[in-house]
Image (cartoon, rainbow over all chains, first blue to last red; front, side, top):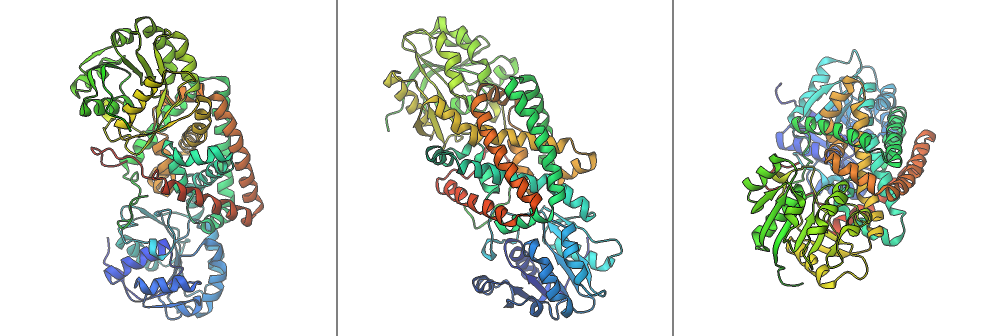
Length: 306
Length: 306
């Protein structure tokens, strides 16, 4: 544990669920003299000011980054390269650039080449979220008891890494550091493939004949509910995740397909023994997840619960 | 809406999550003069008496059914035929036989041939559940605002159907009636295939190399959590569901596989447009699920939340 970090000017490029939740913590704990929010849409910029999430807003990333000692990219990963090109030339010496993206290898590839040598890149991924998007959807307890993974490259300035770790600890998050490639494989199986499957199954249901479709909704409590929640996540963010973590996702999807074929065959053959033993061994993982305290979904205090 | 139903003697064959939750409602509202609980394991019978879920217990289904005006099978579907054979000869004229299984066509095929003509078969499926099993895991609010589907065959005694509907309404459940085959197709896509996928993906993760496996647990909040919850459901119950709803499950799985292949191809080809449009259209279904009030998972009041 360290003392509270302090920044002169934090530029949040993109202020959605994650960016706005972080802004709330920075405000609450006085972690910055100044926050500037950068958003493309006027509606979002208005919301940022209305919610007092930043002292000023702009649609120009370079303007936001000018004079900042911390710039955090909180947009979908697909926007990183354009943003890095834009902010690279105006960054102050010693500034830290970070992000909150769900894919880290591509994030580094998109950002690093455009940063001057005297700027520190500390990629971060807070593993927290809800199905909701936009600045109104954030809340300051989103990161409590969740993990934030940092993936700095070898040789990154240790003080810069520690400052970003301290920022995320301040949100209530726990910190883990690993290399970007390993991060992407772990997230492919824990997050990216589950999301792809949830999107697929909800889509498959949408294509069923009208009568079944309405009943799918009515009887969602039977298991489908959890998939619809996952499949309601931001489409652009997820498009970019699959485009940028292609290799790890396709690898994990390949393994999943093999395992699914095995169960499908067992069903076709009426092989109850194989089914039961496959279903029994997954209980163990659930127990471990519960023991690790990662089983309770986040609840926005202002939300009726979803 | 009708008045509270009343039964002389209800025999619950199998007293797990569903059976014990129903018993709690019957006790609370005085819906029966007598409840008899039938369970194979001594441990379960002890728990039933300790929790005061029944007036007496037995391991013999025929003994439980003797003199009962309502017998409800609350075991995995695979046990139905043996149970129906056992109770058929002892059932009182006019008695109602019901169940709570997740598959209805096979349920009817397993039970109906063994019942005397003067007994009424009213299959039911309360669409509610948690990942927990056993008599301790039940709670009396489990069915509130959930649907119970009745699948009586044409010509079934209307008074018997209405009495079972009234019983489930008393639990706080809403009632829908449909034919068994249609039920099985709807549940295949809303429940059975999602469970199969959840089991598969948690199993795939279990098979990954040690280092990734421990991280899968640590970072479960990234989406994996919901799958581990689903994949912790009772293995025997789910084995029987897949064995008895084979055709509908394989049909829906075939559709799902086609759709998944399409998305897999889009990822491989870097086709962002297809991905984004596939992900965008599933939000609509979520909105409908939320509007239908089926989006909030059940919480056992005595549970810290899982």
